Image (cartoon, rainbow, N blue to C red; front, side):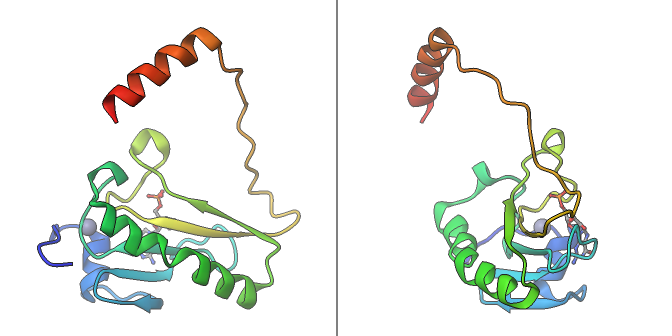
Length: 142
Ligand code: 5GP
Ligand code: ZN
């Protein structure tokens, strides 16, 4: 993408420009998909924009679209290659949310029975009064 930001110190920018190698799955002028070097499961891969954006709120919608449009096809390919029965698509924003690499990325994490990865967060209960305030605040900010 023309004028996309870059950070010469960023490991994923370096992967995006080919300065650091990766096990590449797909590339075009705006995005790259490659295997995660520390896989949580067999076939764990990442999609990154070539532009340096830390979190999704910083991205122009076209850059998000360039990444997310790969999700159906890459998911099908990962399922075909690994035989996984399900998969998680994960995208962490900020350290508190588990983001370790400060260049936005989508994970595709294949799941199999008994993989012990887990994924059950304790659900709360939406309070109607809080919901009313939240709807007002979020829609005002939108
Ligand atoms: P995060 O926790 O930021 O959502 O995930 C970062 C992911 O990037 C981790 O799953 C980690 O294994 C992967 N990763 C970090 N450095 C590299 C690298 O140099 N090459 C590849 N292929 N993956 C990396
Ligand atoms: Zn970067």
